[in-house]
Length: 179
Image 1 (cartoon, rainbow, N blue to C red):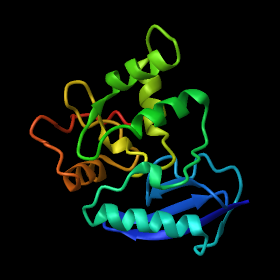
Image 2 (cartoon, one colour):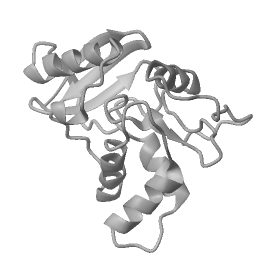
Image 3 (tube, rainbow, N blue to C red):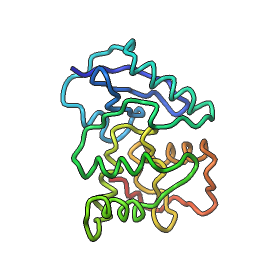
């Protein structure tokens, strides 16, 4: 069984999902691939301890604190490749960004590959089922373009600004490249 709870955030209503013990999803209202990794109906149960922990984490984050990803029991559902990409996302420090290419190089080394497809990395980042906590909003194009955020570029910008990221070298491309 899978469970859900709602969290009202400054960036819109957030839906949390759990398998009962672990957080398996966090989606901002209107996000692409909403609940895309959930294979069963979500049953509303906001009283689960994992949801209390997630709400506490989000409260700290939106208050400007820097909670660690490791504070929560996460279990995003995805292929081993996507899991490897999401693991790298969890390593991007609060207030910093990393490029898709940098992520590709790290994942390639970890998977003993010569290289990784940029499109594959972008697809894995875009399908991250635990937004904000697994910080896919911290990923930018190699030229500084703010591309590919399933929650919307406007929310990506707000999240980066919330984390006081230096935005001077970042820009919104003329054409969206969201996966």
